[in-house]
Length: 200
Image (cartoon, rainbow, N blue to C red; front, side):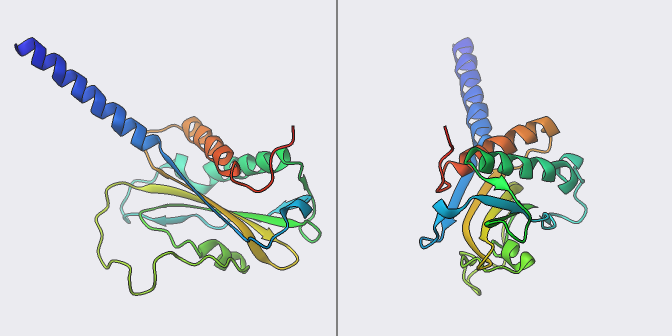
């Protein structure tokens, strides 16, 4: 009888570990677009310099070099660039490119989604989903989250015409190689919802 319980208990523990692992691996993908934008007219892009990483964690939190702007920034932009090139876009000087591409990353338990547009000075049209005065004054933190926002900005109007966001739970024990693989996976899944399809 005891051996059966132990076997069942082991199965339950393994099941819980698998569920926790799956939850930790989840990528939350969200996109928004300007319904009036003509994406078929886009031929060229230029990358904006990265906005400073947002970090709203405990002041005495241990810093993790694999979660820094220097470590992740080049891989984020490389992943986004691959997706744009796969759709036939070519890089051009910022003053003539059809679109500008900006991104912001955060390590936080809450993130103001207007931050990226405010930093660069373009109009997003997508405000924070929480109305002022309705945000909770207190909260309980269960896990840190990492967020990457990608904005596609029409250069001529200086207005964002597409935004994508990827959110995932942060696991501090992951290696830089693990994080790069996650970035690539996140970019691939995010751009599946981009209005332009990859070229064959």
